[in-house]
Length: 101
Image (tube, rainbow, N blue to C red; front, side):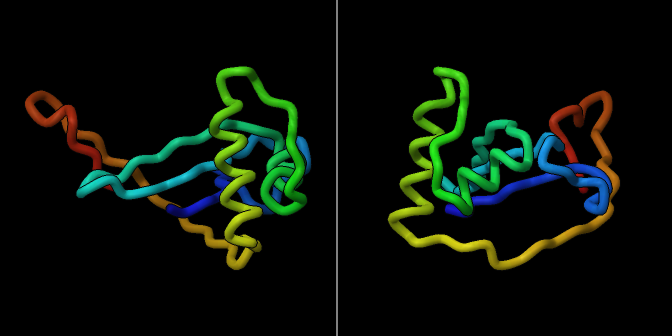
């Protein structure tokens, strides 16, 4: 499993109020699964770096607890910031399920 804080857009414009996704990415058999919630960047940092319970909706409780468990149990620390630009190409007609980035 990988824990990420993901932001879409210009990284220089990120503030504590910018919406980001806290994401757990994992492979189940041969399928990659992503689960995520959206939080303001400052709250995401409090959750992942500060190891604090943050405000969330009732439906997000299990996910937030899983994030806290991963961070505390594995003593996770931020290690890298990556950035890239990409274009998404989506299939048409018979290939509507195809997506290439």
